[in-house]
Image (cartoon, rainbow, N blue to C red):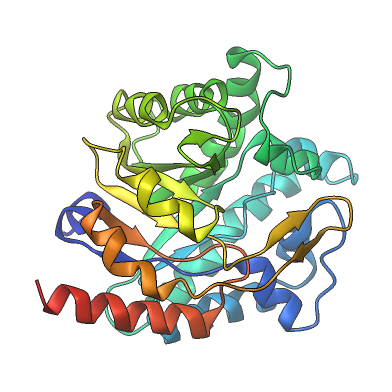
Length: 299
């Protein structure tokens, strides 16, 4: 039986694009603190439809709608721990059902967003929450355990802004038996908190659970130079589709980018997991998948 580790070794694989932008395109209001995670309870069929759209566009990996789904975040809205556990598992089940009906082999990545995503104030692009590694480990572990019970193929530990939180999540992964990729939010060649990416990628290499490391939710132009600093693990990259996020208005400012043009540079920098994040939809993933297919055929 082929495992996700095997698939990474054989790569490249096409990841999906942004969940929230597609839900908004369907007319859903994501202005609340839970963003797309709210629809795990209120309209799971909408999430399933997004997964199906990305697989139809050529994605091979679906990232679940659990980025902002946390026990703390749901509790603030009066949702019990029991229901939160069920919603976390549902996020994996929705992606799995879409994967089982996709053409070809398809994988499910359980999204594990940073502590700052739960705060919904843009701090996943800053880090420095004032919490210890132990406190952050205690925050992440219950969610990882709930997601693991639904048997995803891999954890997508994503948009991590600093080394302290990366260390905490790596601690929380211990003993769960599911591989993970670890991707950082960045500023040029540093994490969002200003630490060298060479140190960040070295930390990722310290965990046997991590099968790939790289960057996501970043300006597309910054991704290839950042990936070039990762010298020991396969690379993962899924940038934003352009513009700058304004946490005050909870909206994107600026024009969109054409990310597919960068696919060859990502492959040269060692990327094996390639997709898009915010402002990247099925049309962009189809173009990216086509470009990757052409680039690998020319190798």
